[in-house]
Length: 101
Image (cartoon, rainbow, N blue to C red):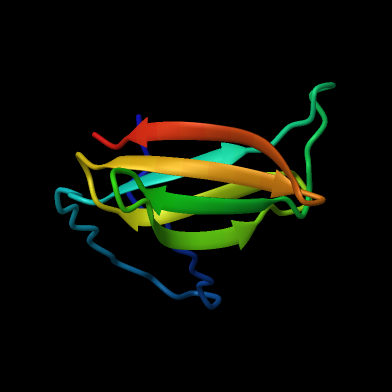
């Protein structure tokens, strides 16, 4: 089962809350990941670059990993080839081409 959204609420004492959640088909894609070193430890503050692959290799977005080494990009366009480059301390760690479906 996949999550399609989440929300928080804090009812007052004696309050009755009614809600309806409408789910629309999602056309956008996303990529989430974790950067690990060779020992399997999370790599915080690594620079992660997202490129649209092809002749131009256009830079789409950039961010740094959090304390758990995690990053995410989205929404991104589906059925497009992307390239992710990861850098830490000016060293290239890994390149990964992704096709979003």
